[in-house]
Length: 166
Ligand code: FES
Image (cartoon, rainbow, N blue to C red; front, side, top):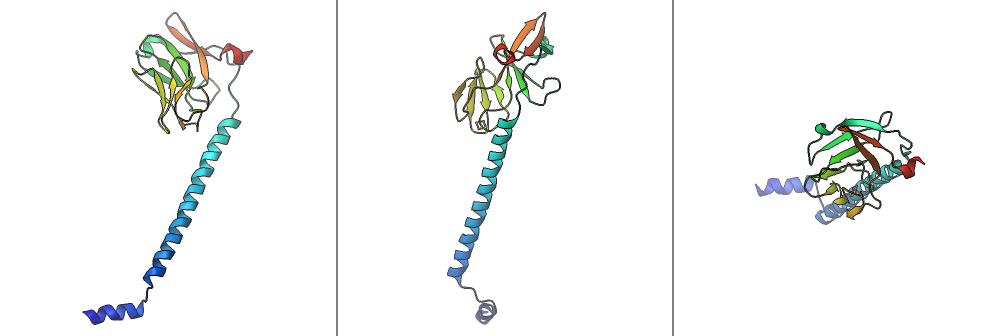
């Protein structure tokens, strides 16, 4: 039994210390490759969101009826002809607010947390005030982009804020 073991070692000699060093080096290369890939991916996402043209000058647009969004509920939508995702929130106080559904940090989708008054970005625990879109916590550098919400005769409309359309 022991002879077989010795024979194997003679046929395939391995220097354990050298083998461990190679392994660590390979691991370091893999780590550098993966980190570089992730950094490049984040850079592309950030650059893309900065280069995207904002959808300005939109006229008032019908989104849905009031009864379509329960209290504490939300509705996702895009403006006609646009690709930017938006979220419409019906707060527990009965008000409606609408924002771009993209976090201002690295463009992850944001979600309303019912009962908290906060919009959350689950990527890095960023939080925004549902009433203003302002950053409450986390890495987002700017408030969420807001749309004005108009409720008329049980219909909900949105439009770009006046300061953006002027
Ligand atoms: S992408 Fe939203 S907090 Fe980072």
